[in-house]
Image (cartoon, rainbow, N blue to C red; front, side, top):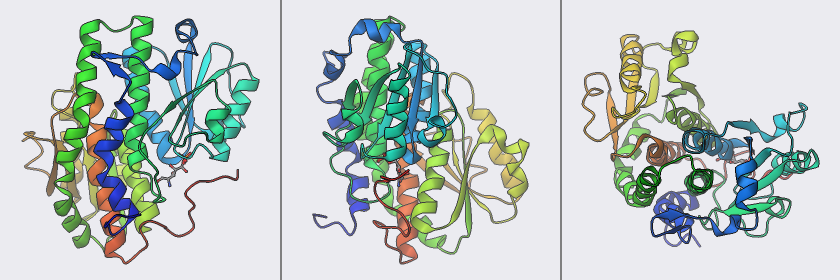
Length: 369
Ligand code: M6R
């Protein structure tokens, strides 16, 4: 089943361009996003939504965090992202104008299932983003937008993550069209960006060997930090989660802006820090802020591995290593920047002789609360 690959994870990481392309297929016609599965849900119901609550766990929750930035920007609906197990037990404020969007690769995660059931009992409507046809969570929802990543076998979620972001972005664009919050020209730009993602992921995958070398040099590392900002922040969290689960290394992700509020105290000579650098073209002008974060940690001896856009020369004087991602509109960068972090964790796990597909203490789907 591994088809010549040394692990399922390696195979699934390489399948990411297809996971995105297959999730887009049938949902963009003549440059216009229309998700057929949402027809039954109805445009009036989509116009009636006052806020969105995303419920998910682990990597799926990070996909939700990425999508929050896009959906709020495009559809102008407030989005909150909740860990399913926290949501369910804190008497959340939900009503019939709340849309609950659950995200689950397996569609069987008990915490997320319970959150969806609870939200519907309170009158909310529920849409599920799921990778497994006919799973329990989609059956308990009002509508389902399937990701078409294909079966994911490795415990660490990779191709399902990029497919989840893709499906949520399609959903955000569908909402923006129905609610009239983006001009046709802006919608068309986003569609083009999305359609270009598979090929760009392919370009990132070409650097796998370099990332692998980096992981091999770092196989004795005891702690790795990850920094990101805006949509790069959930990617920092995802990079840290991958490293914990696959290489059993202490890892933490931070919002780069939070550094001065505490985490910078952790920086000591030799501390490896991955930094997801926003594009210099980011409209909120976050690039110089993150470059100055890099300078601050470098001055304290951190070993900086920057993930930066092709041609971004500002990071060169301060980073020990630079991994390049192709140019993309800022909201689409997470789909590219996550790939080297997945490969890094996978290679470090293998360098330590660990079972990359089946890490200790973990199950592919968590079907108990
Ligand atoms: O099947 P689900 O997407 O609901 O699973 C959610 C998490 O358990 C899952 O993403 C987990 O965090 C992965 N092991 C991460 O690689």
